[in-house]
Image 1 (tube, rainbow, N blue to C red):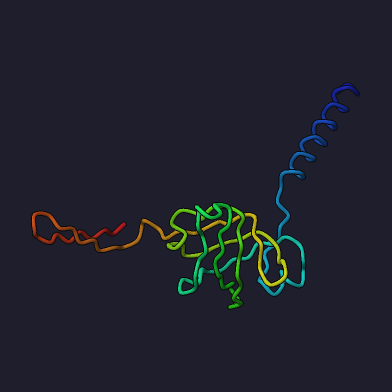
Image 2 (cartoon, rainbow, N blue to C red):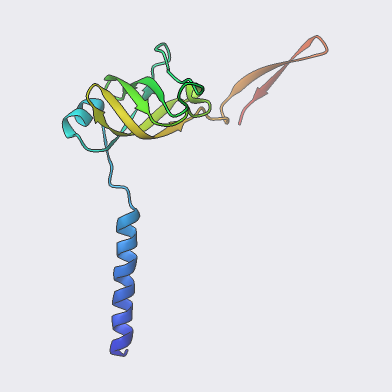
Length: 139
């Protein structure tokens, strides 16, 4: 191989490595207590507290959504998101928020949800012309 080919291959490898390094996400997973101690951006996995109030009023401020969440270790925390409320948020089984602690609230920049699977054994009752029809799905 010529020196020029070797130099071009090395330059290409460095360029690809640089692009991969810039696009990868180095955010770590933590609970709310670790997030408070850390101060950096972290991912917190947990569950929505459905019996606590969620605040979202699109007419007042469409970019403010707050809710209460419990992480995997049982720590409860108020979460504030600068964006709209995700569709079917109440139905989510699990929530992952990315952000950092700001005083007594967790300010998140991203929300990911694990929604209930549509491929579960379910029993659905349909009404047609006054009669009940039961359909069982076993997928």
